[in-house]
Length: 136
Figure 1 (cartoon, rainbow, N blue to C red):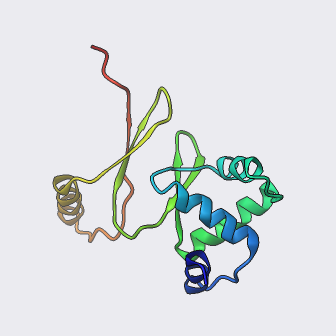
Figure 2 (figure 1 turned 180 degrees about the vertical axis):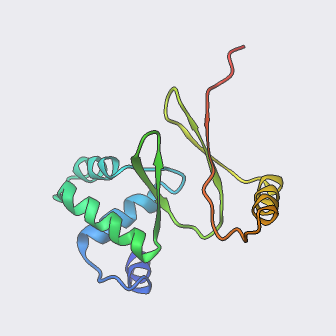
């Protein structure tokens, strides 16, 4: 049984060809933040006959099952990345849309301190920094 089949079954999803193909695209681009349209184009480029509506539906199912994380960078445009279990934050270049993942223990600590100072426990968060390359 392939790795994708095992992952789908562990997530409680039936193994179907579109799900296997879409999961394979995500796994072959582990550092990418792909839109549904990016996934669709990749399928078409590989000669697969999967509709855009199916791609959206499968990605939403993957999100509900915890296989992918959805992010809404720059004005609501959704992109997806494999949910690898470790927390990270993002920087998005406002000029070319490049997404940079980063982790910073001090930022994480400060966020917990800020929530606690206001009488709350931090249960989850999403930090996105919008950046521009420095001009020399």
